[in-house]
Image (cartoon, rainbow, N blue to C red):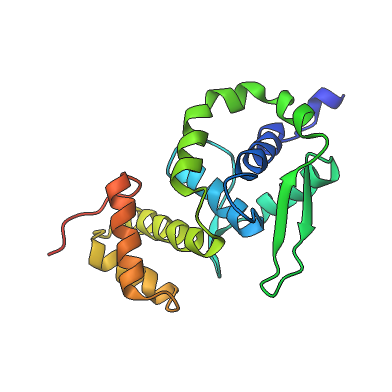
Length: 191
């Protein structure tokens, strides 16, 4: 009977894996960063995690990630604690049962080792706000392409700025160009 349950062990193992890899890479690995990194892993690196993202206040978001995080926390695969600072937020660290949870899907983690490594190298050191901007730019570029719109640096910069006016246009354009240079979005020539 237990084998028949639809438990998303791959997603749980992924959350544990990211917590372990980011423990030394960044000062605070929290819920917003987790959301954006998994989104980028799916969209940019093509790892099928099974999450359905929509665009919300802080960029691409799905409540499924938070539900999975709560479950992994309850299984002690990770420890999620609130951070008592002016900015607040959460810290996600590996828990006492991290190894057994990862072991359940060690093949999944091994299969995507290279993509996980590239994700961490490309995005692991960014703050939650920096990840928000990058994930939003990827989301908007993909959305424009699905709608048959021409994705240029100017058009994408403007669209992201319309959604996130608190980011300066120059910063958005720089991020769009960075994502284009990395090959993480496809952008046509302006004009």
